[in-house]
Length: 316
Image (cartoon, rainbow, N blue to C red; front, side, top):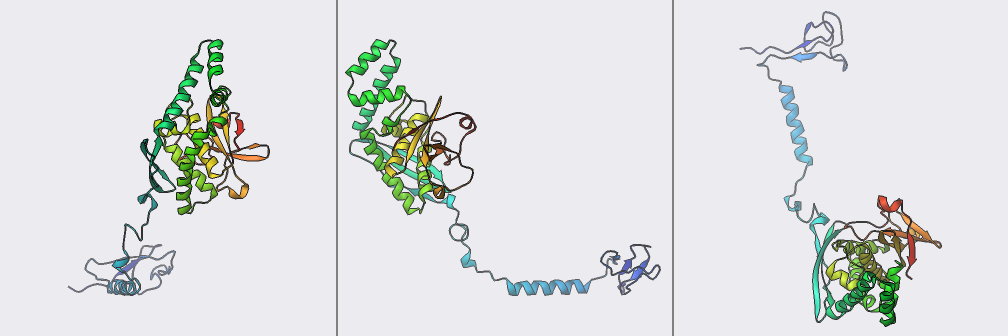
C-alpha cells in the first residue's frame, strides 16, 4: 500500500492542505506562522523519517557531550557528603570513684556523643547542699530557718540566701563545681576548635550539650548533680553559665518570675544571625540562651519570655 503525504488543516477555514504549502489554498492563511500554524493530520501508516533522523542526531550529540565516570559515584562520602550522617565522640571525662553518664545530641548537622563522669565525693557535697536548702525552704517557722542558717558554714549560708533572693550567681561560682565544670569547658572548647567553630558558635555548641540534658523539675542544685540527675531551668542555667565562665565568656543569669535563662555578652561583630534577642544591661548586650529545650539557638526568645521582664544578674 502506497504511503500518502501528510496534510495540514488550516486553523481558520479548516481546509486540508498539503504539507509543502505555506499558505492555505482556500483562504490564504499562513500555515507556517507560529501563531496560526495548522496542525498536521497524518495517515496512520505514514512514517516521519525526518523526526527519526532528528532524534538520532540529538542522541548522538548528547553521547559526545556527556561523560559518565562511575568511579566518581560514591553516594556515601564523595558526592553526597551529608553532615547528618557523621557522628563524633568527644573526649571522655572520667575520674576515680565517679559516676558516668552517656549523652548524645545534634548540632549544626552533626551528631555528637559524650561520656561524662562526676566524682562521687562532689556529688555527695552537691546533694548535701540541696538537702540543706530543702530543709530551709520546707521549714514552717522563721525560727527554724534562722537556726538552720546560724549553724550552717558561711559558704552554705551564701548559697541559701542567694536561692531565696533568686539570684543564683553564687551557685554558678561555687568553688568545687566551678573547678569541675572547667573540665567540661576544656573538652567542649577543644572540640569546637577542632570543628573550626567561631566565638559565637562555640558558645552555641556548649548550649546544645546542656540542652540535651533531660528536663526534670528539681530544687536548685549545683552543676555536677545536674549532669548526673537532670534538672530544670535554674539547674541547667547554673550549669551552662558555669561552663561559659570557664570558657572565658562574659555571662549573666536572666531571672523571670517562673523561669531562668542565661545571657551571653557579644559585640556586634561577634553575633551570627539576624533578629536575635538580647537584654542591654549597663551598656552590655546579653543575648538570650534557653537551656531547657534541645536545639535552641542563641538569641531565640520564646513568646512567653518576650513579654516578661527579666532581672539581670551579671556573673563576671
